[in-house]
Amino acid sequence: MTLFRDNDGRWFMRFSKFMVITSPLFAELWVIYVGLKVAWDNEFEYVQVQSDCLEAVKLLMDPNRLCSSLFLVRAIDIY
Image 1 (cartoon, rainbow, N blue to C red):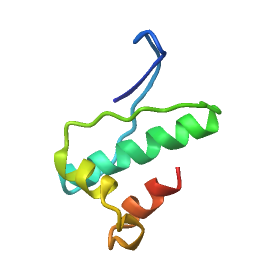
Image 2: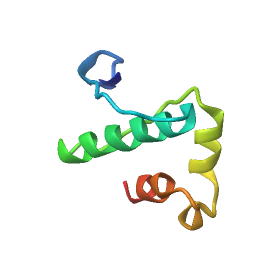
Image 3: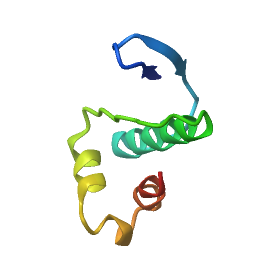
Image 4: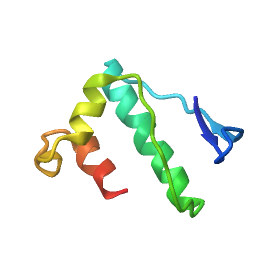
């Protein structure tokens, strides 16, 4: 499940989606991707992403992420 919170920390939207994922890393990357797409579609101006998956954070913070072999890392960078 993904939660969206306002500036005061109150959640105002949540969503969940069934996905068949083979690893926790891919599950986390999919959640981030889908969450950012929802934010984009709802025209949010500012978005802060929080994750407890250090590996996903490292991949998304890597300066060479546009060259990543993982499609989701490259797709997330668009948002």
